[in-house]
Length: 213
View 1 (cartoon, rainbow, N blue to C red):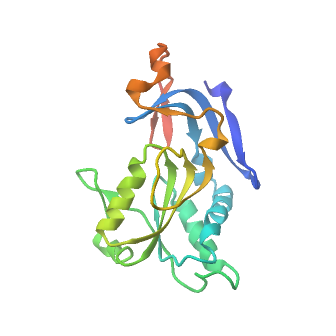
View 2 (cartoon, helix red, strand yellow):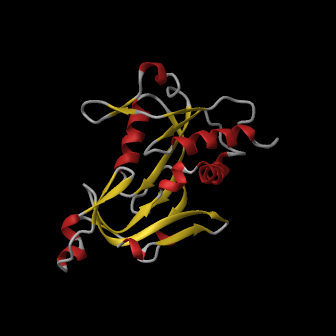
């Protein structure tokens, strides 16, 4: 499985790339025929800085941002993104402001929430949501519901990868999409053609990785 790995790079910045592994993968919600390794984009500081510059571009001249809410381990990128928005040139709308970078927590019912001392950074604030990937939409939907509850004003959604399988009212700004990977597909478990062919699962996709079966 691993020896079939290939890398997809961003056309305008080849230093930004994600490793893609073909196979038969499952999460708790869907099956996929590729695993996307986004870890280096989130943990390599020099790459994360380049990623942040690309993700900040749609907001630089037109969008006031008070808070960046980071999901799925994107805090390093979020911090660099805030830095980029604040450091922009004379046309940068956020120059001289303060931007906070926060992450919600899960309660005992696995619902997202913000600690009392963080809620003031959300209520009536202009918020950008930053996620690692949008596939089933569960993570992003949870974040949007949480921010709605606390009175946040969503001014943007940014993602490292967007599978394009779900439409949102908010525009999604993403580095990579399903169009960057030939034949990338997601399936409901009972509709998975690989399962119907009797092909065994290669791995289970978990938070920030996968477990081979």
